[in-house]
Length: 489
Ligand code: NAD
Image (cartoon, rainbow, N blue to C red; front, side, top):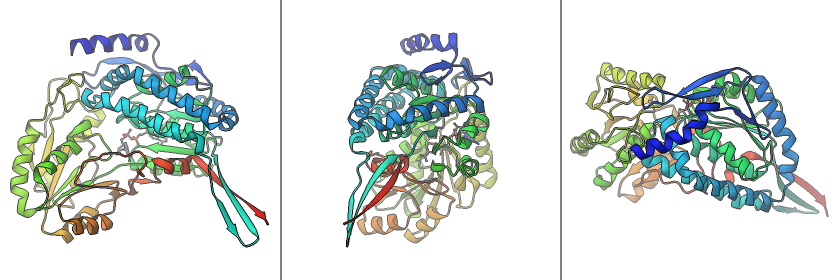
């Protein structure tokens, strides 16, 4: 831990000196709205100041993205591929620095962030490889007519990201946009600005032409809003809360903005009595307590069959009490501090809500440590489907367990929420798995597995969990327009 802290200190020195400024058209430019502070959730200490951008800065970034667009879009896809692979190489070279900064800025544990930095490089490689064929279309014949379809990058786009695993998530949006030939203005979350700055520097050093990726820091209500309203920005790729998505849709209406939303979740993990219970237990723990529970696809609602509920809960409680809460840079740590006091207060408020609703707090439900925003891994049982802890996204290490009698009741409870991002099913009955997953209202379902991503598959949610899909060719559908030209034969 001491070594890691010393390394971190070296990396942070430059931020302490100059603060985090915007990167617009390849230039370091302070925001015109002054600066705000970013603090570590570990001990609430000051990390550095961050540019607060206004509509004026967003306008400069959008204009830079617009000016850079024609050349970037016209560049041979093979050239874009080379540049994006260089970005991936540089991410790998600086993976340790990225992970250290991410842990300190967000409170996420090293054991997960060291992998997340590498996954970010994979995101770049995956989309880089598709850059040469991204514009490919098809030929459709009709009597006396030949239609040729082709895709064109939509133009400069805005990417607005949240504070949970911010580096990896940003690359998941920015890499396909760049591979498609779009230019980008990125507005990262105000709570986690460090690694967005590193990404923009990495891209600049890897040879991304000026203006192709622009960074504007600041708050949602001014910089974020201005980006969604800017007429030169053709689309907004947004990851964040459902209510923010709804605001962005309204803000973008006047300029007919194309939007893609990855929003909140209250994802069920359904454990049937015929499941491999030890594997299910591992997965239930992993999917809600890893990444501090600050994960859109976390399985925050456990639905467990009545016949096995007592045994399952006993084992779960024992395991939850053993989860290591600690300094995010300690490799043994499983749960670190929550991002910010505001979020800590929100998560802790759900402990009181759960108790007042009559659910049983079997583990956690309290602060861990003396300083920072640490919450003990929390488990509520005896919940019923209408309780707020069973309906609302808590976004922390907080699991709500509900029991069910049979498959029909499980499905009814599982679908009885506003959200529909992911679902996890544990059963050895194949017919049940097929029927249940067909009727479960979710964009992504894993049967007998935790969330294991395969990048070519579609990623996204239904209901209040999102609009549109990422991954594979779905990302290109969003960042490109499809044009049809019809030739008379
Ligand atoms: P948030 O919605 O508060 O903020 C996300 C981003 O939006 C930030 O950059 C913020 O500054 C910006 N923003 C806020 N108001 C805005 C406005 N009016 N106009 C434009 N931009 C605005 O979300 P958060 O608290 O940072 O992140 C947590 C949320 O993100 C959770 O709900 C989580 O489920 C969701 N999430 C979803 C996915 C997914 O793939 N579905 C992935 C990660 C996180």
